[in-house]
Image (tube, rainbow, N blue to C red; front, side, top):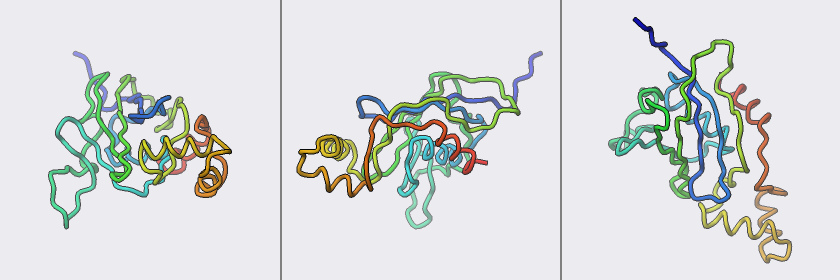
Length: 187
């Protein structure tokens, strides 16, 4: 008889859809984390500020923060663990953030690993490129923003740099900073 562990380490790859070259992160989380915990981890690793609504989608099932004043078919993300939604390697779900800008993330379960109590979770292993700024206007707005900030002769160059508060490097990703934030906010 084999005994299956009650929890595992889930290695996830999160990719922001529609952006080329890709903005992505690889992280490890406890399989028993609820979807609200995963939302917080995704906000941190991607670089969002948690200032907009979000939801998870797996097929036609939606998970998020139900609103009493606005009844819907959304299931409460606090009541569902990640291992209830993603069950096998290569399983995927969608994480939507900021319904106005429409940032859609593919969250894929890359690996199921044995749980190790000595490892601090969540942890980001790797990533590529900076997350777009909040309220930039979705993919089309981000493309226009990048044109303006990377071209000093662009008519909106100075205005966009002022709006963003200085320089913006679309290639920048700081793994150490992300992991410091995960340790601070996900204990």
